[in-house]
Image (cartoon, rainbow, N blue to C red; front, side, top):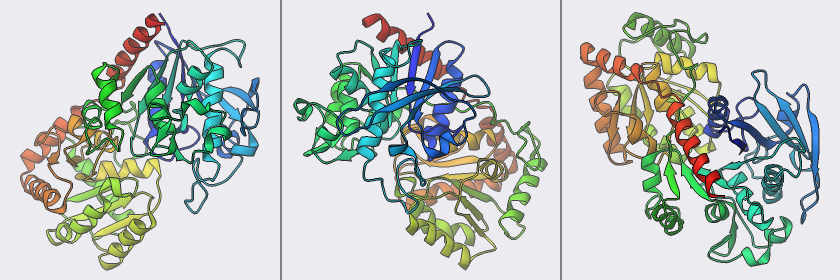
Length: 474
């Protein structure tokens, strides 16, 4: 059976990207299209609508609480993916990011903005907006769309729902008066509903109301049922896990991550063509104005936030450089980390290169040129960089947590360390330097890493089976 699935997201790499959710939304849905009638729904941000050549308005969602009425538009990407957009200039016609202004401040009305998305999703899924389509399954993602299962329940809709947790740390917390603003029933504000320490939690609402929960790796699915990683929601998540309603499904990466044919690389290469990989390394060194070197090149491509262990990299940087290594960094994030990295670059411009931006093509060149990819994340639900790195022959050095533990084979395709601390991290760095000094071992690990495909096929199989079970249960 080809299920009709409404995939609700706040980011889609085709049009708007903040983090990995955009990449997953674009790649997973495309991987599903051969087996599922999947359609996406996302907000009609200014940056999204400006890129669309043709949008057909298919219906309208009425005012609810303080949420203005909105139109629902439908468009098709160049490769045929069906996309709906919530058209509401009052909420989405702004600069900045999907979540805040250019200075990094959250929009004050984010409760209304993303409740509007979730409410529209529930109506669309139930067949109440587009007369030509309704969903068999609603698939929400993270806190911005986590209220969609709740609206289905409040509307007494029988459409089953899934909520995928990409990062439990971002919960969408708002004051109690949000209830009236988003048209939520007062009766939903209790400990077994939307309430979280006297606030409204969008994410918790989804954890309560969704028929099934998934997250993006098997290890993270176990971790979030513990106090260390559960962000105060571990009790609820244990209940869902014990009821077999929480599943870890590992993300994949798309087929464009192939260094043999990637058009963004200075020198495309395959396993064994290590002289070509060295050419990529030298190109990256020139781009970042680093000295030519025979030592290892370490890459960090990440959001520059505490979760990613940027402070751990900063603490270890002097040791890495003193041992003959060089570091290139690309990303944006917390101003304190951006400044600290730029300060480190100013002290050692020959050995540390920093780009406070994100560009996909440049990220690919860093993965292709680097010998090792740094991932000392304190927690990592899935992570994509370690998969990108392996495909491009860069051995990841990661904390043994979440998706890093599930995708890095320690000593064969990368290096894992046990604690999110500088000391533990430096132990793995030392192992990496030792491997770099033994070319046969290094090249063997590179070849093993590049042999990992990380396709979406297994993920699609698991989601298809889950869709079937939920559809059969209604």
